[in-house]
Length: 163
Image 1 (cartoon, rainbow, N blue to C red):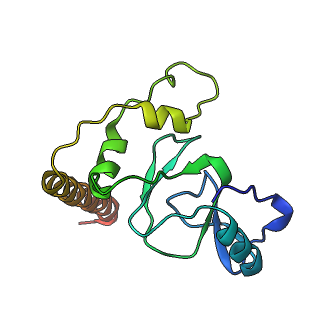
Image 2 (tube, helix red, strand yellow):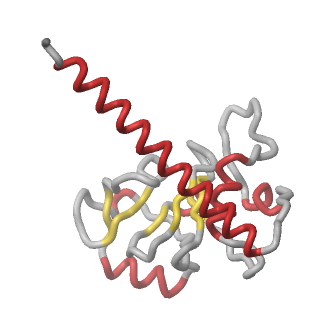
């Protein structure tokens, strides 16, 4: 979706989560009415299940897989691109995690434009290889995250060990 939502159109609770750049990939803290969501969803583009959403400002390049939940995303600060079946979404998400976006080094206000995304070269293996790479790296990310949670838990519990 690409229509701006104004602060007076949001509430701290409600029907449809509204993700701003600060809550993207986390828990929403603003909501919009269902009527407004339905109106904008009909008029403007909307991600499909499996699409990769990308933060275009703030923490540039943060990616989230759209899983089909009803949600609205902050105008041009969160983007997704339609692409052909020659690109596997899991591979694309992994690529977006490591790509060096052009023109961001040293700028005061960081912003990723669609043209930057579209001009970024990407080497695409055949679709089966993309799927394998995407799945493998996604599993690895999950293992790393689980290990980090375990280490944090171990540090916390070791502080309570009084023996």
